[in-house]
Amino acid sequence: MPRPRIPETSAAQKATRLAWNQGLTGKSRPPAMASVIPVCTVDGCGTPVTGTRPPARGMVRVTGSADGAAAHWYCPTRCAAIARARADLRAIPARQGGDR
Image (cartoon, rainbow, N blue to C red; front, top):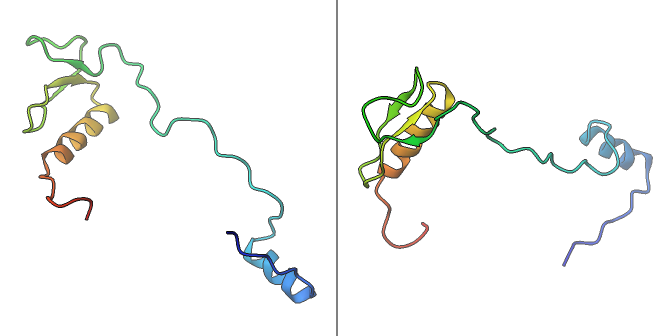
């Protein structure tokens, strides 16, 4: 149940609210419908390693984690860094006993 709002009756209360909101009034705009991480457009980025040659020049091989994930080819920029971070996170052993 939402808490009832007490009306602002004095000029000092209104001035305090405006100072707190840095002068902003009204409703905030809805969040943008853009993805947090834009999709990579490099040809062959994220493809599984099937041979010894990368699908395109300059691709970086990122090995899977110890849990048996396969190695993939990634572009040498942010995609390879994200893939390495995900592999590192998968390598952390899970705690027993729930979400604590």
